[in-house]
Amino acid sequence: MSVALDLFSIVAIAAGAFFFFAGSVGLLRFPDSLTRLHALSKADNLGLGLVVLGLLPRVASLLDALKLVAIWALVLLSGAASAQLIGRALRRRGGDE
Image (cartoon, rainbow, N blue to C red; front, side):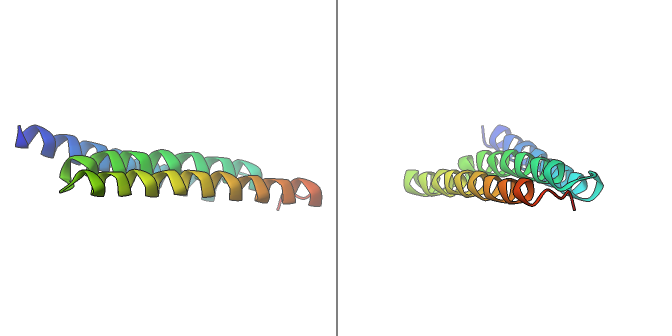
């Protein structure tokens, strides 16, 4: 069972790292600010979710698992709020920088 959990953790964390990398590539390659923001926020949220999912079998207690999930939820909420504010500011300014 331990080998299966190790393999699950490795695959989930590696997939999360891949999504972080893909979001960074999108940040560098997309043409305007709104598409860059979209790529970065979506890929980073999914990447962090997969990293947390990969770390859950490794935690020592239920409280530690809840802390990981709470951190992920807070990052989701703050990422969505900041992306909304940045997108609204870009739209009001009228530029694509």
